[in-house]
Image (cartoon, one colour):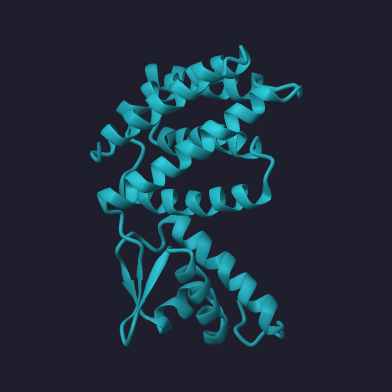
Length: 220
């Protein structure tokens, strides 16, 4: 990207924010990493002013911390941070499930069920090296579905920010192959509860999933 491209300051800052978010989600910037502003400018390929605005925004969201005279430090995946992020997502998932079930809308769960069964069956057969990445995408698809069920733009924005935090965590605590089958089965239990419109069962299934996730990530 040409750093001298004629972008307005606001547009340039917005694009720098998107680039920073992508770097956090992809693992180009990792949990606990220190990086200087010149290094960020080189990585994100945006002018220093836009990068500063992006850093200021990310700092306000708790995705990184500005270190005077050092640059920034990416959020650390400490046990208490992981527990808080998972607990927050559990609360949003449970409320999203409750609202989905309470609505009269068609829940359209077949694509979710099919995707989860496909990943689970692949993991039980001969898992490929890229199955973990596919499993993460499938895992997120159910959480996104529940977040959309909140039907609240403020809550969904909070979910989206927390999803970035969890992506940073997942880059240092990847989805190991041994976890895929149990995780998919836990999600399928949630999907079954949604399909039967059983609110208490869905909420319990979501709680069980998060308890197990905490154990797998070693923070229970």
